[in-house]
Amino acid sequence: MQPSTDIIDSHVHFYTTDDLQRVAGSLPYALPEPHPLSAYLDRLIDAGLTPNLLNNVHLSILPDSENVFASFVELQSLQARNPARYGAVRLVGTIKADPDYATHERLAHPQVIGARIVLHDAAPHTVGQGRFSDAHWQAFYARLRPHQHLHVYAKEAETNLRVLRQIPAAIKVVIDHLGSCHGERGVNEPAYVELLTLARQRGNVWFKGPGYRTSTDPETCARFAAQIVRQVGAERLLLEASDAPHVGSAADGTPYHNLFDPREALRFTDQVARHVSAATQIPACQLLRGASGLLAV
Image (cartoon, rainbow, N blue to C red):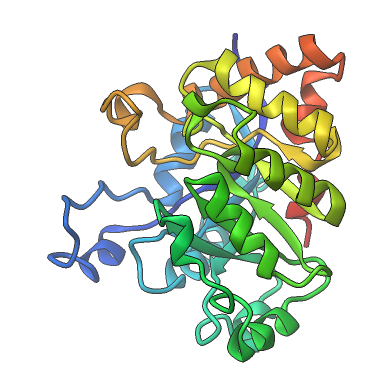
């Protein structure tokens, strides 16, 4: 199935060769290919897709989010040069959630909608009490503006749960990849059940796609999305995202970039939404982007 020609991408990463040179030689694996905003837009527009709203999310391998701020300038330049081609694109950004980096000045940028904690495969025991609730973090939380959210990524449901327990109840939270990157454990994994329960109790926690890191099988992924809908609410789900440029590997070792490009990732989210819609009778379009108000500035 083809995604709509009018799209949003609630999770994408834009960075250049210059950004990658800053970390060259410091990673335990090969650098990814550059993924500049202009090339991404041109591929989609040339394919007949119209990107209306994009969220450039902090890239974990970079020491800061200067690439996010640079993308704002890049889009301004593109729109000035060719308003007919790029003028409809709106770009927001999610910066690094570090108490020292996410200053008042950076959070005050009119296109910054939140900040991201990246934990990857961190084991639950590494998130001890106080890791995200000491005085430095409390000062950071106080700097977040009412429309901004805290974005959390961990592969383990229990790790996400332990982080969420330390975040002040008034802070909006967005949890990546449907809350778990272990689709093989199923939706009844105890930590996952607790995570959804706490999300429902707080009333201000959203779960975001695209979901292929949960499972590359759309039906398996849809079971997690449907559980979120049932336990937390359809208004707390935002599926339409590409997570381009698709770094990392699936459970069977297949590199994600062999399985997805932005169009394929958006097609995947469309398939997931249709499966969930069939199970819940909620329109697929609502599941894809019904919570896109999170990206508003």
